[in-house]
Length: 462
Ligand SMILES: Cc1cc2nc3c(=O)[nH]c(=O)nc-3n(C[C@H](O)[C@H](O)[C@H](O)COP(=O)(O)OP(=O)(O)OC[C@H]3O[C@@H](n4cnc5c(N)ncnc54)[C@H](O)[C@@H]3O)c2cc1C
Ligand SMILES: NC(=O)c1ccc[n+]([C@@H]2O[C@H](COP(=O)([O-])OP(=O)(O)OC[C@H]3O[C@@H](n4cnc5c(N)ncnc54)[C@H](O)[C@@H]3O)[C@@H](O)[C@H]2O)c1
Image (tube, rainbow, N blue to C red):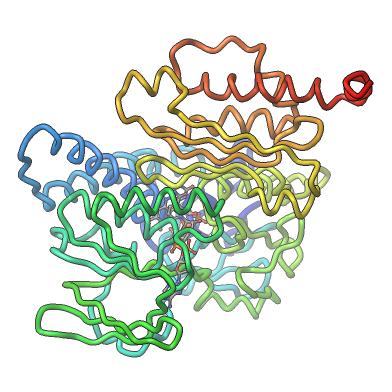
């Protein structure tokens, strides 16, 4: 039986980070992958979705100036070419050149440290589960009998449909709905919650929905999908809205209702590895089997590429260098939804901040109507909400703006390093820039820090 320091199962964002971390420490690493390396991010997630979003944005702008003939077959070809380009950094040859052994096939546990692939067994001192997640397809009557889309087959289509029902107004539903609509597809979004992106700052979710509605995306909120039928033209969806039935028709349906961890067929029970919402891990990312770790979507709780990287590195260090044994820390998590405008977030919503810190929090609202850079580009829209504690340290930030994903990074630095946001007022920002908005908010935080200082308060009272 071939022996390794670390066996990594899965080579998406989490598995690749894990493998490269261990290789960096000179460890003998086996990567087992049932498909091509790269995982969801490269083939059916971040990369192709952003490829589509960017092309749809270009076309949306161009349509203001000219009649554009949209060829969705060509657009999807370009999207796939982008994935192939990223893949050139992740091929089995690249992985083997970096020192890993790559085996193609589905991994199954024989015992905690022995893995079977295609009938051959491999042993390791430590094992990393990084098998990702798959679209969650609930047992809605009739759904299994119609040819539905998920992120897994969406980017493989030869062309876009004329009309689509998008089930779910989460990150996938919102990003793909806007892009498809901009590319000429009639889009109806069906969401069971009363607002889109229900985990986000509510007033910001509403803004982003209004933006998509203005462009022509239709929303049915508070509608739970209950039945799907095939029709001559495509499909018919029945929903339940507080006991009332409604019907929606379209050529096809896209299911974007959340994710399930990829654990089927892995015989995790033979290794004593427990699964609940994902593979159960402790604060060191070790599973219920000693020496077996898990990272990325299969473990959760944040199903994001950068969190897969973060966890992949931490879990691997804990596995191969046990003296380190760091605890996972989710205090400073940020993400961006790549609608146009983008919607970025770091930390708590206002309600969460109030619940945890009481009414001592301070909330700042900033509108790009005040920002010279935005004024120079007519109609440039942007809003920022910043929540700080009584000391001026960031608890949460929410930004809707062009390139909000870049802007949030500056807030994220202040937040993660525990810096008083008011200090940013003394940092020279180029003019005219979007990031100058953050300096302007910092100016206000700085002044309020002074006004809220106990000594100043005393003087102001007297
Ligand atoms: C449409 C869409 C857009 C997204 N956009 C973003 C974004 O903009 N930003 C962001 O941060 N996140 C985004 N995400 C989420 C991101 O794609 C995932 O969080 C990330 O890819 C998870 O990485 P992973 O390594 O955990 O899993 P995966 O990338 O799924 O990798 C798991 C790998 O394991 C392999 N595997 C599974 N089972 C086995 C087995 N038994 N044996 C061997 N191999 C196996 C799979 O083939 C796969 O290659 C998006 C997701 C979707 C669906
Ligand atoms: N830009 C990004 O970072 C990005 C982009 C896309 C996806 N992702 C990741 O992928 C994950 C999965 O995305 P997703 O959009 O599939 O899931 P999600 O959990 O974000 O959204 C699913 C939505 O479906 C709704 N829903 C569930 N059952 C329903 C039913 N029967 N009828 C109507 N609505 C129903 C839910 O209320 C929810 O709003 C996200 O959690 C995110 O972490 C990230």
